[in-house]
Image 1: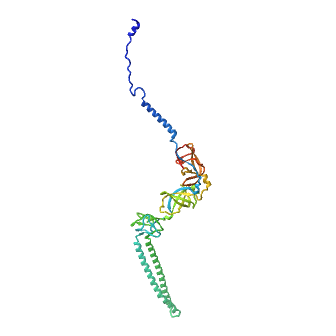
Image 2 (image 1 turned 180 degrees about the vertical axis):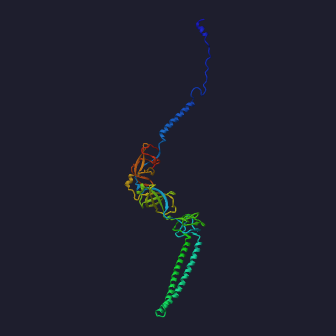
Length: 420
């Protein structure tokens, strides 16, 4: 046997390898894993793109475009300045009795109109009436004493005159004349004393009569009752006392004396002058524009608020205007703006204009995603908007909402562009 045959006999026969089917999930990363990795990558990329585009760290603002005032709308005597305040009454009184006493009747209620001198309440006058009756009796006794003194003097007068005649003819001694004169003088002095006592008694009667009249409380002026304090049976006094003693019967307001008091910043008070026209809008009736005018500028300032109080009077009277209402006052231009100035002006929303502590008015112009501080000079304010007569050009974009938090050169994100 050859060597080659022997080698073939020594070989070991082996079975062919069996192929095993790969189960799902075995042998390397599955399609689910690759899908999760892909989704995570997409989310990361989207977040990076959103942050780069949206920039949530940037302030969000709304903008508007400045419009040219070609129509000359500023010539209508628009608002030079706005201020807020409250309706107050220049004539208001808490009515009380002049004397202490118990309330007998209250003849008014809230909202009732009263006339000057009208009886609004009465106090228990039983003690006052008793004192008046006593004083009246004493005055009557004093008057009776006067009549007795007058009769006595009437008797002594002719006796004294006859004694003088007899003494002059030598038929009456000096001693008898002196006695007759003394009787006459005594009667005359008694009459004078009785008259003085009667006058005192009559004065006492007047005092007690007025005390009784003071038990009747009357309205000091015409107006409307805004509050009632006392009720029948309560004790009232003109000054505050202890316990449950009240000092007032009711509060009366003269509705014809209503006006508005507003606080104007010192930096703008130069724009307000007495007699200049104004417009008032009440918070309760925001669509009602009430014509008014400046009464006076009170010549003193509030140090803590840096403001000056201005009194504004209504040109019309209306029952809807009541004290303590919140009011918004627009001080109007006393003379129209010229048409030439109007053609150079632009109109922006009032919220676009910011006032700095120095009194300078500024707007923020938005260009290239950044805010540029721009000092401007204002004109009138009308229903169309705020007129800017210098510092801004038509078509420029200004910040409106959020402008009060911007700084010069700050990057911004515009969320909406308002029309107008």
